[in-house]
Amino acid sequence: MLTNHKNYFLLILFVVLSETAFTEEDPYIFIDNNAQLMVETLKNNKQLFSEDRDLFEDKIKEIFEPMIDFRRISASVMGKKYYMQASKAERIQFVTIFKDSLLDTYAETLAQWEDQAIETVFLDYIASPELKKIEVKQELNTGDSIYPILYKLRKTNDSWAITNIIINGVNLGLTFRNQFRALADEHKGDVSLTIDNWVSDAGNAGIDE
Figure 1: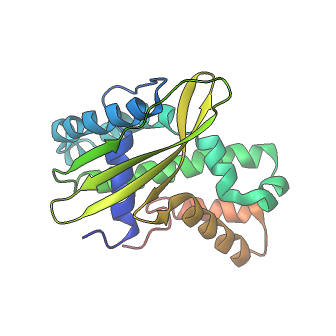
Figure 2: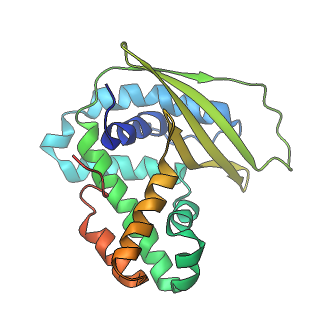
């Protein structure tokens, strides 16, 4: 059963990583290719986590970064109020911190992955210069249950990037935004302290065990 946030982040890894980062113009193929190749990637590298964690994380980072629009997601997580308050340096700092906190969590949870099956819901896609946003649906079959996954993607420079994921009804972008807001409230709206506190929680990205 998927009973905590770590399970949700584990699912993200399953559906967005692969040995080759695809930049396919068709968003459905973009998502599906990486989802299916991820199965083999996990099988081939599972024990690397215990043997060489740094190398394991490097493999994740090399593929993961080009597929996710971290700049846009980080701005959304901060929210308009705190994003406008933050300096340019603080915004850049949070992008790096946010990305690293996710990678730490993913590396830890990947080692626990077992065989699952995932299916993309393909729809007719017609490329258009006006089409900048799209949603792609998938279903994860664990054998016991089926979990719906919804990707929100945005097109920039003829390639798609993931800007948010909703898994089994859990909006991950909103979850992170609520976390940032709670940290900001705790530190009386001080953006710098809020970012620093996120650094201290980088090991689990604020996710309860």
